[in-house]
Length: 288
Image (tube, rainbow, N blue to C red):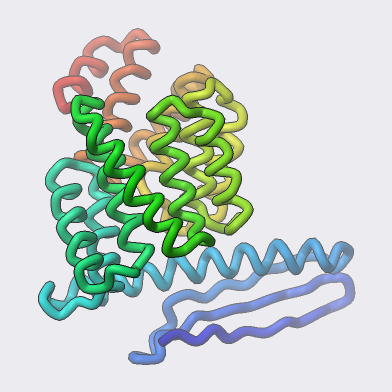
């Protein structure tokens, strides 16, 4: 349903690579970009451009498909489109959105019980529901682990399944297993920014804040449509590194995408408190 076209031109030691992504249904250009690089290290340039273009295309295709999924009535959605709907709701990061996401993923599994992506989504929802509940219902964490292991049994090369399993294991305080799962996910797909961002979260819990910052910045560099949790985790990391202005900036970016997302608002409150701005800290707490 999509066509990528482009060209490579060379002038002396300079290389220009262009690419544009076209929606076959409408003929519309979804994305276009050009990259100027020196040819001195041609293979390094090739790897860099492939990675940049592929991840950008994935982001744009996902956004385009989300728009199409939103326009269709629920009773006509396929398992794939139901998973997109689940994804859209999951990124709201609030209880109502999680309930809607769980419904969509459950329906996707009913439509296709062998669809690993739907199990990954269900596991992600159960994991985040556990967080929203402040760990009050441990069963949701166990449910998340079961769904993600089911996804891996259906698709052993599903990088996202290992990514979310690593996050679940982090909250179970199985840190060694968590890092192993996240490393597996990264080996399977080093371009998946959710995998990279998940590593950042686990590094925060391990107190490895410089590693967390590197992972999160890599994810944000690669992803043209970053989910709000990338910026929330970045705010958290900057807070621990005592870079408070950057923490507030990242929190605001997260909230602009998900206004009811609790973590960036909590980071705002903590950061303002550390900066001695008690009134602003109290206002942020009241919003939480």
